[in-house]
Length: 426
Ligand SMILES: NC(=O)c1ccc[n+]([C@@H]2O[C@H](COP(=O)([O-])OP(=O)(O)OC[C@H]3O[C@@H](n4cnc5c(N)ncnc54)[C@H](O)[C@@H]3O)[C@@H](O)[C@H]2O)c1
Ligand SMILES: N[C@H](CO)Cc1c[nH]c[nH+]1
Ligand SMILES: [Zn+2]
Image (cartoon, rainbow, N blue to C red; front, side, top):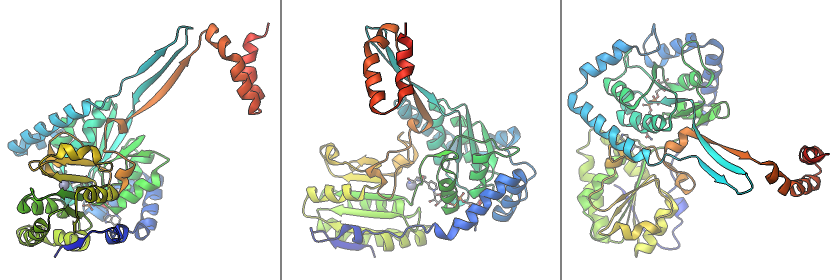
């Protein structure tokens, strides 16, 4: 049964909402040795690890044109349409995120500016097994494509027969992925970070994965950049008397089925809703194919928090900084300005969280574990970098030369001062 708490100022939220987390210590050594091995032995190591962990001995690591064609020929045509629809919405939304170069022109001939350039080569990890989601391919590849990345490389573990699911291949091709490799786990992160005979080295790696993938991304950070370390999924629902208990329970369970460590929290001003949702969660749990995962999540990480008023509800939500926040109230736009920490906000009674997972347009790769206090959803910004530029005319330089020299002398940096003063020596 989901645990219910009556909120008051004396409730220690930190303690009450403490979550079990991955223990990276358990995989530290394994991942370190895989990284070193791939760095030293390249493709040979990739092929051996794929045989060991994914149960298939591959001749070729790269997906070829024939395999792509087969995926397009065999995929369920309705699913392909949905993937295309979702792609188009994600593209439309992310195109709005594109940042333009800018220029500041001064009268004395000085020109200052900023230019935005795509990260040339990026790698996307796509999980295998039951979490092989085409939606995740779209959410990662589309912003990279819009950013203008020249080489988008996807890695994903093969199935036991050495193939990749058609839905993943189709989503990858529709979004503009250039090359796809059948390799997963820490070994694929090593391949993207160091390069092998066939897998190109990239500058940045994105995408979710299990603890081996997350640990490998942590370890290679510095050699390459990474997007974020995504933790287990979370949803927090703020609901008042107007919310429907069946819908609220269904929305909590939508994230519970992802992971035993997923966190599903209802914060409500209505004791009636709290009681009904607790019962309804039990009922709906029994109807889910992934009941065991969802039940563990609900029983260990799930909470219903009953508050006195909306001020308290907003306080609790901002404290948790959830990955997904649903505002199950009649006028969500009134509440929106008070929400300070949340990855993505689902507004009103007709906006269940899965809309955002699949096709509304905003990204579903979001900050988890309270990191929405300081970070943002995956976006086009994650696939670009900026350079500033400075142009001074002779007049512009003359106007500021004494100021630069003063600064440099104060910092004891004579050569800095001379690089300016030398230009005015007679
Ligand atoms: N946040 C999101 O948007 C999102 C989306 C999809 C999936 N996910 C998460 O991604 C994860 C997917 O996990 P998964 O395991 O199904 O797929 P995965 O592709 O992340 O991991 C599979 C790989 O792990 C490696 N591995 C497995 N056991 C190992 C061992 N004992 N030693 C070394 N390496 C080992 C193997 O190389 C295997 O190919 C889940 O945690 C899921 O919640 C998150
Ligand atoms: N809710 C997950 C993490 O935000 C993303 C996802 C993919 N497919 C379904 N859901
Ligand atoms: Zn989801």
